[in-house]
Image (cartoon, rainbow, N blue to C red; front, side):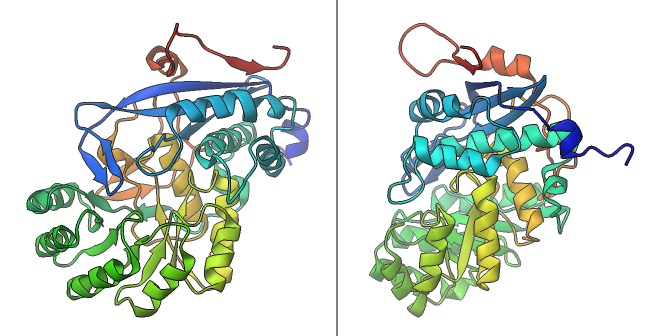
Length: 400
């Protein structure tokens, strides 16, 4: 049909020709800390690893967020994993075969206990989705044929000193946010004070708390009892990721529904936790699950099992933010999502169209691919080399 792009007319013969990594230090707008340590410092920078995939003159972009206070992947490990292990075997493979790309990933970096190096894999996965969408002139949601909603409400993060919690809430309310996610896991008395202050400052708002694996079973149950009067929507990841039996004990006795995040790297993890009845709600997080391909499988499995879904991110900049919105919109996830990148970093690599966020609500992008226009000149100008020694750029390309 005239005017409609088809895989046969536009993707045939297109293969991955080049893959590049760029480490871009983004300006940090606010302080942000979790139970594992500091994420951002206001006035400092927070690095992103951007991945550029080229094919037949078209380009796709992806993002990884190094998160050593949350998981084991660092700037250095993400760059070397992509450059030395993931990129070379992807060259000359069809750009549309994203499932095949994940099989390549798992041969290059063995999954082991769960998916190996998911953040690095996510950056390449996002770039492939972006590239295919741009070649076809379709947004990721249109590419999937799956978009149930056009807007996703967001949650404002409260993570600082309990005495400053009310001020953090006031800032979020002024920006139009009506939901708040409270980071806990430092000490139970401080956690309770922080939540109490948030509830007093936002009496009608949705609130959930996230311990980022900080507590034991007994501590988690104590926290649940003490927070119950504050009408908390969910308690996220109170225990270590590899403790499904402990999470089942918490879920059985908790006065707050239990959500699981760090535990669910691969869809098979969700299958195991669901079978053990160790969660009420599954957290969908694109980077944690190696990108959009496995995230879609995880979300579909959760819905098929009757398990609730809530969306989260990894302080993503605009590329990761857009990817998450496409995923959440595909599954009709209209609960407030923890996509807090705009709160804490500025995406200095964006030129033109990107994600619209207004009054605490994000609009799902409609442009081709992820829907974010990347200023390649800005990326190349801002990029730094993460290792000691002279600055250099390594391009993984056909014939090199």
